[in-house]
Image (cartoon, rainbow, N blue to C red):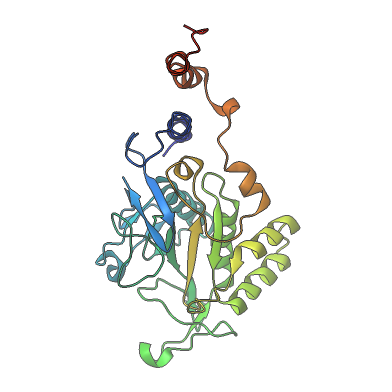
Length: 288
């Protein structure tokens, strides 16, 4: 979704809220709406991520589940970030697993992923000789960055590809049109990524921001086999009941509001148009 469409959707949400009509379904401009929390919500008018594209792929295991849906912002993030990573890695594709069901809500595979703002990304890896591999399954990595489930995969030992995984994390952290709130990942792998970023001379502010966004979840599996990415509620979705779970970074909180100054003049006129009639209802006819 373009920035022009986002601005129009945000304006519609503000106009709806100002007129007391922010209930879901009153305004429907075709853009997505995320409702509720990631572990108890839904999504309306979702976008569907194609099973493959310029920079990403969806293996059959996840394509067959049908959890291909997310908000416009999430799908646009995946497309943009995948293209960037492919360019920076010489064409290596991001492997995308589950997003959300078509209407959101629970599924047999996830407690979260319910409101169109979550996606699982399979970790980049190399074989024992250092050659990049294209995974069709999630492999479990130990604290040393080596797979711990080799017996299940014909003895094929893989290694956590810290360089390509860092480039993916960096692209997610730096993305501006949909803010990433959390990247859930196994803590020893997080430490490898941050140490690698420092060694390659990444800006200190970027590393600090990545350290705040990367976290190992405390109420589920350690995520040693994939990254679970969650974006914040967009300003317009907040008007329809989207709720972020957990702490937001200070600059995220500042960006989430839709202010009057952000609206173009025609939208301000549309918002103010009902005011004289509304005031007349309470006996104030000065503006008639």
